[in-house]
Length: 325
Image 1: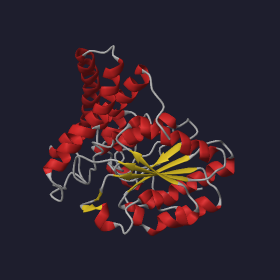
Image 2: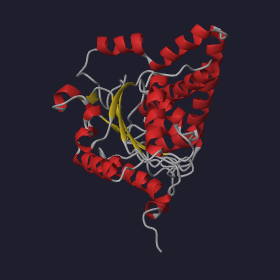
Image 3: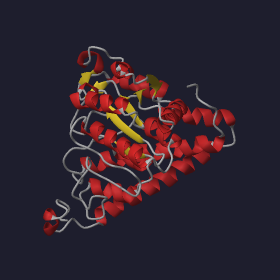
C-alpha cells in the first residue's frame, strides 16, 4: 500500500479540505467557550488526514457512519458548513433541525449516516449498511469509523463475524488517536495492535500513518477495491492524534504538553501536505495566506448563519420521533 504520487492540484485540494476542518473546529471550540454550543463537543483537530484521505478513495455509491467526533467527517462528505454549525448551536437551520446537536447529525443526500453518541454503536449499523450494498448489488461500500476506545466493545466483534461470514463490503476504520477518553490504548487494550483484531474472522488488517493523507488514500483505495470485488471487509488502523482533549470539558492532564507539541511540530497532517506542495513549487506564502483567508471567511459565515438562525419551535419536540405507516 505504498502511497501513489499526487500532483499539485490534488495536494492543494487535500490541503484545502483539511484546513477547512481545522478552522471549522477551532471556531466550534470558540463558540463553545462563549456558551453558544451546549452539551458535549468533541473536536477533530489533528485527525484531518484520515477523513480526507478516505474520502479521496470513495465513490458516490459509498456511505459513511461514525461516532461522536464527527464534524470533520461531515465536512469531508461535502455537507454545508452552515448546516453543520447551525446544528452545533441547536438552531433550526441545522442538519437535524437543531435537535441533534454535535453528536447526532445525518445527511442521506451526502450518504452520511451519523454521528452516534453510544460508543461503538455505529459499527453494527455500518455493518448493516454494508449488508444493504451487498443485497442491492449497487457497487457501494460502507466506511465505518470508530475509535481505539470503541475497539473493545462487544458489538464490534459480532459485526466483524457477520461481515466476514457474508463477505460484506465494509471498511472498518479505527481512528487510533492513542487515548480512549483519558486512558492510553496501552493501558486499555491487552493487545494494542488494533489492526489485528479481525484475525479470528479472517479479516485482513493494516496499520496506516493516519497523519499522511496520501498513505490513507492508498490504504483506502486497496480496501475499497477488495470490498467492491466481493473480498469482504478490511480493518484499517489509522495511527493519528488529537490535539485537544477528548471533549471540550477535558483538560487532557493525562498527557504532557511536550507530547502534544512534538506531534504538532513533527507530524501535523496539514503541514505535511504543505511541504509536499512546496516541494513541487508554484505557490507562494501569499497564496497560502489567501487560501487561509478564504477558508476563515467560509467558517465565519457558517458561524454567523448559525447565530442568526432561530431556535426550534417547542412544538418540534414531538416531531421526527416516530414514522406512522
